[in-house]
Length: 425
Length: 120
Ligand SMILES: Cc1cc2nc3c(=O)[nH]c(=O)nc-3n(C[C@H](O)[C@H](O)[C@H](O)COP(=O)(O)OP(=O)(O)OC[C@H]3O[C@@H](n4cnc5c(N)ncnc54)[C@H](O)[C@@H]3O)c2cc1C
Ligand code: SF4
Image: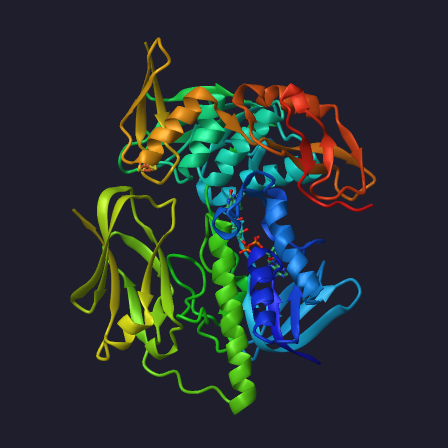
């Protein structure tokens, strides 16, 4: 069986940044396994711009952003295998994969970085009545059809869900000559970035209907129309508010879920809110030596944060390897403190911290549970508030973060728990 | 005097900006929480412009289309002229990211460049 220091599962932006950073920490033996025919992950189909504002201070398209990392992977001579599907990872970190040239093969990894990204919520989970006619696509599938295969899935379109992919596709289909009649959102606010609402909908006079859902899909063979209705506070359609829109295509943009079949089978503890693995300050999962980053860990809206998080995962995996080689075993973890999502916060990543292991700072990323205007993000060490940050606005669609310094953590020796909360002013 | 309503995209606040455009060309912005909202509104009123990203057909490659963009922002009202002109463009692999594929698209003075390298 082949052995390898770090095996990276997935060659999207997360996998690429993790590989580059581990190499820069002096790890020679790295292998990226990617099931697609090229590196870059979902970025290859995201041809719009807006990537990399934080990392490169310029606005790149998805393929351009990916290319910067692919170039580094090439320059650093990091090995990768394309068209290679990882099928299993054992708790002992034996990675089993398959491709045409090698058949089925297993690599014994000293450390594994999970970077498999996410997939779209399927339609089945939605519970829309009516037949199952042709013409219903997930927004990501439509994006792939238009931007990679070069074909337009329909001419008259209704989009369900106002997440970023739905918004981006509203503009994309319009530019390709389709008529996007309406974007319907179940929640009273959009899950997408403000910028996308303005530049993808308002620019093209595409209406956005909030608190609105599909109650019927017309057509047997092919979609002929959809019926939308307003919903009440409980999300139930209000009778009498139905309106029919004629269309031949319905795009669903109803959320992403981290792709964690492999993580689950390996025995990693999964977070019930993010659906990604639970990780500590080193982005290490509950399985020793296995790290996670990017959309497989929690769904990100900005690729810059994916790259930053993945670079940290790569660094921690490298440290793990260095320590393993020095001491032949893992030093005991030391005391671990849980990080809890308090009121107004849906989840935090990481969800625990070992203060002794924190580098110079600890970044805690989280999402709020509703739209807030003028609130405080507060951090509590047990019952004492140690940090309070005013935010003029916070929304579930935009990821938030707080930073704690190593000093803050070291100076609280009896610390039992850290809580992040939203407090109204 | 004309009134326009805009949404600022400067931050998640998404302030609703009330813009008054006077006959003499003076612009007054209200509703912004910070200075960025003011400059955003002025730019949106005086010269709204966007980078356009789309695809053109490509021959001789595994992919059927190649992703492209306008090298700089073009005026907002030229977006459709730009995408219509690109419908007629067909390129041949290999193409390298950054290659100029069309000069001066739709008379905007801006070039169309490839955003991906596609080999034969
Ligand atoms: C439609 C869309 C639009 C977006 N728009 C923006 C934007 O405008 N600006 C911005 O900053 N961010 C944007 N994002 C967010 C950003 O692009 C993503 O967060 C980022 O690409 C996630 O990177 P990743 O590496 O975690 O996942 P991915 O890019 O999904 O990569 C995961 C890779 O793992 C591979 N893989 C999965 N399972 C296996 C397996 N079993 N074996 C082998 N390989 C496997 C996949 O093939 C894939 O290549 C957008 C995301 C989407 C989906
Ligand atoms: S005006 Fe300032 S606070 Fe308001 S959305 Fe724009 S940048 Fe944000």
